Every structure is written in C-alpha cells, then in structure tokens.
Amino acid sequence: MVTIAERKRIASVVLTTSDEGIIRKIESLIFSKVHSQKNTLPKDALLNWDDLPDAIKASVERGLAQSKSGKATPHAEVMKKYKKWLKK
Image 1 (tube, rainbow, N blue to C red):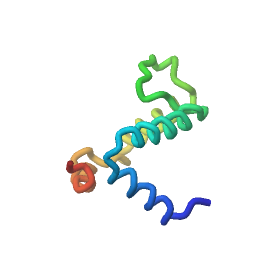
Image 2 (image 1 turned 90 degrees about the vertical axis):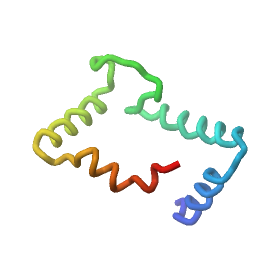
Image 3 (image 1 turned 120 degrees about the horizontal axis):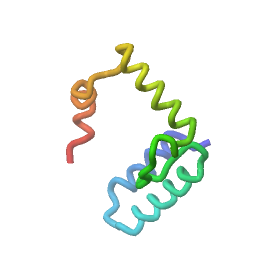
Image 4 (image 1 turned 120 degrees about the vertical axis):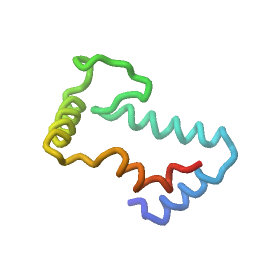
C-alpha cells in the first residue's frame, strides 16, 4: 500500500519540476493506465450518447437525478470553495 507521505512526496516532485519530459512521462503513464480500465474514456473522446459505456451513462443519469432533486451544489459555491487551488 502506498502511504500518504509517499503520495505527497511524489506530488511535490511533480509540482516543482521544470522538466517537461518528466511531466509528459507521468501523464502518459497515468492516462494509459486510466484508459485501460473498463469504464473510462480517453480525454479526447468525442462520442455520441449511444457510444458511451453503460456505466458512464448510468453515472450521468444518477448525477442528473441528484441535480433535479436538489442534491447538487451550485457551480459558484464550488468555485468559491476551491478558488485557492485554481489560482495560477
């Protein structure tokens, strides 16, 4: 099991490196792993609803139902909460 300390150390290196090659290799490693999983899509996928995996459709449907029932958090509220992490 990877500890929180190990994750933080890796994140620190990624956030502070100026070596674009390292960042590209890490990005490639992460996204190739994510894309190989059953219910994920490549970040550049342009698909029709009917082309989406059932698990993704179900997730979207759940989110829409939650939103319609008032269980969603307004965008402005989320942005206010996470503003400190979005600054460049």
